[in-house]
Amino acid sequence: MKAQKNRLGVLGSFKLMGANLRDNPERVAFLMHRITGIILVGFIFAHIISTNSLARNGWEHWMAVEVEHLRTLNPISLAFFIAMGAAVFHGLNGIRLLLVEALALWIGRPEKPKPPYVAPSLKGFQRRAIYAVFALWLIIWAAIGYVMFLW
Amino acid sequence: MPVDLKAVTRRPPETVKIWVRRFHPEKGATWWQSYEVKTHRGMTVLDALLKIKAETDHTLVFRYSCRMGVCGSCGLVVNGEPRLSCQTQIAEKATQEKPEIRLEPLYNFPVLRDLLTDFSEFFEKHRKVRPYLIRLDKEERENPKLEYEQRPEELEEYYEYTLCISCGLCAAACPVYASNPKFLGPHALAQAYRYLADSRDEGWRLRLEELDEDGSAYRCHFAASCSYVCPKVVDPAGAIQRLRRALLTYKFRLFRKRTAKPVEPMKEAKPTVPLPPEAEPIEGVDLSALEREEALIPKQKLLED
Amino acid sequence: MKAGTSAILQYLTAFLLVFLISWHMALRFPPVYGVESFPETLSPEVLYKEISTSWLLLSLLLVATVLHGINGIRTMLLEWNASDSWRLLVNGASLLAAVVLCAIGIHTIVAVVPP
Image (tube, rainbow over the protein chains, first blue to last red):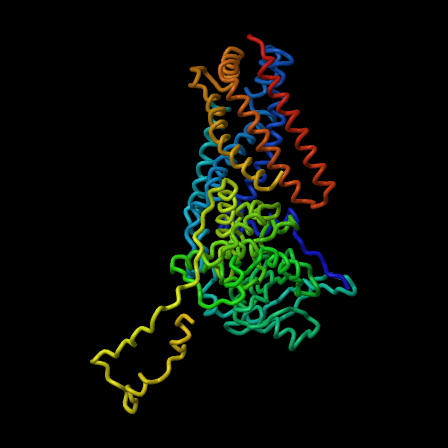
């Protein structure tokens, strides 16, 4: 007789996204923080290596190849734009997480349960901060898009 | 968890199709089986399972005990969300348009059979965080004389976390528990904080040294699903953040805690408070006889030996 | 590295990066240098002036970013598998990647020539 393993693994994070977006946006923020983090590490690799061409190939190559890509809308500038969005979200949510995780602020005080039975940490200021993070993220990202492509 | 309080007053669909993810350990087979259940107003998922067991299929295995959300043994995944089956109304999950409910065993727990899951790892992790009061004075620990003094605000600091019924829903919902077998889990960490925050506990140094390891509060990333699914509003997510703050402040040698002492024994017997003059005895009750009656806790016991 | 030390490293670098990356991104805003468009802020004169004056901030940004990023990925990878060999592999690869990336970045700052 053998028990069946039932651990969801990494993909378990994606369960019930619809309900989570409404009732548990912390989980959506958690998942997006991870995904943007992975995107950013990839971007940092590319960014450090591509800016190194300054030292290796000189300014002419820099202007002709690296900067030229950012002048128009193409896959590379689009990837750059996505990385910028990831950076903005990771940063804004990171500020919230620094306060919540490292300093345990914004999560309310322990209290005796009373109707409608919502945990204090879900009612705390961090919940409003999440909505602010999402709103600010979209605004700043749109502004970056304007500066990059339409200025 | 936001419970639909109106659901109990609604009439669920006449018949509901209940899909159960079943597992047979000897055959090693997993399959989805459906049952048609005639419903009634106020029927819970557990009621439906009991009805199936009594009328349709007696081989269906699940765990339950109190049927009223106190014991915490009937945790299931209902439509992808960890719930206590006794606290989930059929009318809350099945609608007239889609009279279907999908039941699965709790995620992240080994399945023994059908909906029955194995909690040994879960309780092992609970045991690891020393869920009991630690006192440094051995004599007082072995032969306690009187209770510890505690202020109401100190009780409030941890009271919420004492309501935990160890149902395992938090572990089933936690995305980190799902991927990291070493993670102690929301339940164990919330209990660790419950004893750390208790002013009667003197073992904070030991607790914080032991919890400063991989798999402890540092692995929590505040997805807060545990607090969301908790049927007793224990708020494990909040407890873990406070535990992490304690761990970080301890690392910088800034952690401070006031620990309570046992109350001082009374020096002398105080006079009994007399009844107010306007008090009128109930007919047939002799007040002076009541005052002469021995108290439930003898005064001598409260006095110093 | 103990879990607590790694967490403190992560929080401290995060705190630094909030300011450093805001600064780094704000410098690409055209009016800062009074130029026409975003790619103009990447022209040789502007960039050389920026690197030669604030090389210290740039290298701090580089080190903090690499430590924060690699440490974050390392924690995620260690969640997958608890075996010791995996642990050793991930830790070794993270250290190597961090050193290589820092070296490449420092090389960019040091070896850049005036336009």
